[in-house]
Image (tube, rainbow, N blue to C red):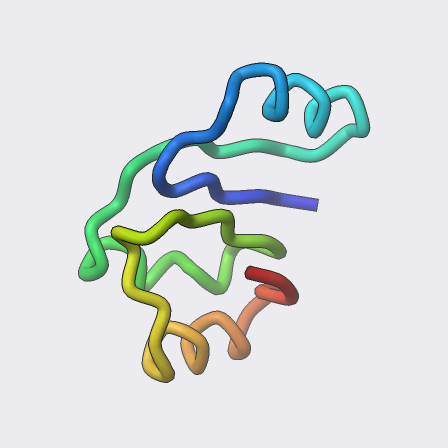
Length: 68
């Protein structure tokens, strides 16, 4: 399972996810950069700065996105 962490996450939390075998991408993408790639991830982890709207969800649903 491929997880995108778009606004950072505690290093210990990232280590735990990796221990469970998740592929982690810990990067900061702008909304415009995120739109074309969101469908490549199963999970998106964000905080308050990343806009998650209908357009982003629709893009994600066309690919792998299952959870935010």
